Length: 510
Image (cartoon, rainbow, N blue to C red; front, side, top):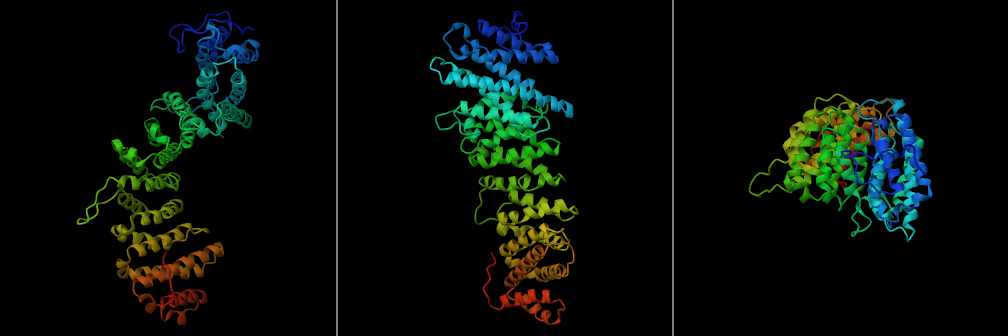
């Protein structure tokens, strides 16, 4: 079987492919197909389609059963050639470079991916047949060169992206499943880091293929590269990720430092995965943890709530603080040094105080309890600003879910528990804010669900009880006459509850 134009010369010297291909007719046929993809004529649709048809016919030909026999000296170099063919096919089906490429280009890419995926399925079935045959000992070498490019293709088109379609996703999913089957891996994670300690895994090979497209000049050329890198990185966890830190940290920092919010979020997720899955000692080495901290801290100046939200910058910083604090040494006879958590909380409070956008207010409030809990008694350093923020947020209606005010009440409870000696001097201010909140919520006639109102009232009541404990019963005295003069029975009931608990009933502030 001879593909179109198979009598033409093989790739010339100086091309990006090896010059010494197998001398057999089968080798020359593959070489010619590779030349068609690599040459200028591959830009023409007809030439590329002809090359795909030739390759499909070649894989179905009986002669192709000899691919992995390895007994014929004329077939030496065939595994390397198959790897180059796989790379060429992946490049052919890659999304358009740069920002161009509308829905028409994307649909064209999906069609190409479906066609290429069928070819990869045929090729992997050849490998599986050779694997089950005692006469084909060279299948391991062939699979070693094919696994990386086929994996990158499968991940590129298996995820839901603008350039994929249900058909191309289905074919790519089949390719990935068959690849795992041929490599005897139970999962993608096993494929990447190895199924056992003795197996090396293929993460290094995959990163080697992605590396040319992950530098500062090229990482935006192929829009799929960042997603393949991120998805692959998430599959490698402790204890395997630490040995690849030098490969994964620079691209993650590069993506997170982009001006586009989508890329920032993707990069921060990658950094967070690294923080969670690399030992602290490795992150502290060469000042890597400080580099991570400054990269994340700079994102706090953005006004995009999507980037600051939970599972992004703030949550990543909270997991990074324990690592950074390992390098701090405190002597008991001196004041505790200011930590990175202090620095971040100071900036957050500075942003929270004047913030009027509800989405950002909710995002900040959602993370505030975690910062108070992290600093503990050291939160006293930020008490004045925290007081202003808490009172200001309690005054503003936050919509039907009341997420911001609920979280602020949670932060207030933690704050009083950790800084209780400083609470009595703020008794009047906090008491007024909590009573105003209870009255406002009790009289609220908006669409807020009753369950949310009840949660707000319960949390505010708990704060009043805790405030009374911290002030040694002063709240009870100040509230003594309110139940008799209060016209709203609902408000009166909650105030009586505070007095009853204060008079001796046990109360767990935690």
